[in-house]
Amino acid sequence: MKTNHLILAFIAFLSINSFSYSQAFSQEIGATIGPVAFKSDYGLRGNSETNFGNVGFGVGLMHYINFSFRADCNCYSDDTYFNDHFKIRTELDYHVTGLDHFGKFAEKNDDNGLRLRSMHGKAKVLEIGPSLEWYFRSIRDFDGGNFNFAPYASLGIHYVSYSPEATTDLPGTIGSPSNTYPTFVAPPGEDPYIDTTSSSTYALVWSVGTRYRLNDDSDLVLDARWHYYGSDFVDGLDHNNPQNKANDWIFWLNIGYVYYLD
Image 1 (tube, rainbow, N blue to C red):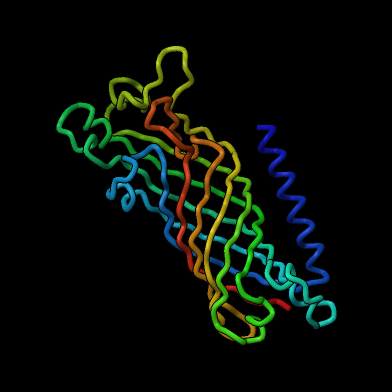
Image 2: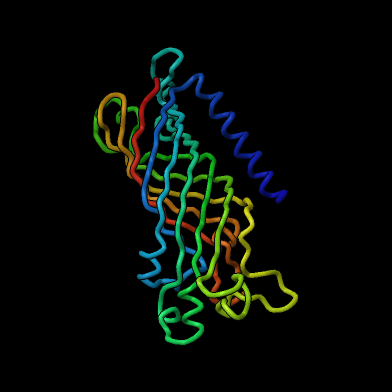
């Protein structure tokens, strides 16, 4: 938990400095929506039913610092590589995904197959944090209307608050050997493999995307994004078995709208 507090303080520091920089540079705001594929302990790795079945929906609000243009003088800033190729994006995201078990083990006509099919989850996640966007082409030329597309890549870190759910259609409380697949039942003396306590962690965020110029005041944004979480309990499950090779992560394909304030 101390690590999460340090991450939150670091994010707050970056965000505050971003807003202070905005007094000398221009600002943009936006919103984004799109499907979220949640990669977790539900389902089988690489299974197409899992990939397309455990898909939720996300929304986000965004704020940008544009270093290429100064709002205080309504003029271009110094023509440096950083000013002309980088923006800082600060965002608030929320996504929800319903989770089920798919694949050959869940399809078996036995008690364990029934236990898997009867188990359901939900991941509810709120994230906030900054990212640094690098634009392959000149931001100044894009803002000036010299071309319509501005591809970019970004890297950032988010503070994450999550609240998972896990239930079963079978009698009893989820986590007992009678109604839960053996993989998710912890041996005596170990912490439970199912924990739906609300908690927090961090996410490493990277993305690739492009802007499309609509007019002098606004852009469309198409973004493909990966969030890798610092916890494996974002979905409520974390088991100590060889097949559990990574923490929870998401792939988020979203489309957004950005409006230039200055």
